[in-house]
Image (cartoon, rainbow, N blue to C red; front, side, top):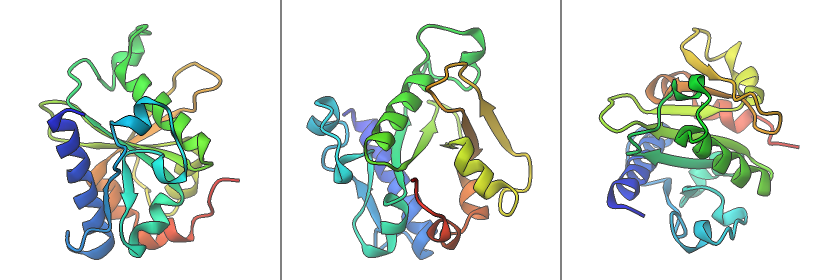
Amino acid sequence: MSGKGGNWERDVCKKLSKWVNGTVKPYCFWRGAGSGGAFTKNNLVGERFAGDVYHVREEGKFLTEKFAIEAKTGYETASLDKHLKYNKSDPLKSFWEQTVEAADAVNKYPMLIYKKKGMPIPWLGITEEVFKKLFKNYLTEARYIHLYWGVDDLPDIYFFDLDYFLENVKPMVIKSMKGRK
């Protein structure tokens, strides 16, 4: 794992901890020991090893028991509009495929938190199923980007400005959400 990827994962964990606690410390989340390492590279996915973000305090369990969270940054060729050209190599699509695969393996919802190198806005991506559960009551403004991949086995992704999402979807909302069946 490159330093910037590990730093980004820690930044995401701090932001999510602040969302839960109102302050960064104590940390509720931290990057997994296997993040970017042996577990990911050898495809050893299990309940504790799905995604990059794990709860380290009970207060954060509600999120990681429902979502497998991947955090990606620094990929210059990844772009929210690259999929429109139907490129064979689309890093963002690859990130989403990885996120969905990890989530499916542990029967959780996928969540991708992505920040393009040099851009100020980090994005949070969720499936249409989660989007529909949240949109009518909490995410009332049309402040999202919907990417349709054109592939039957890869769900669409709905991207939100990470800060907008965290301001409008309170932890209690996710706690009350039913997990995947």
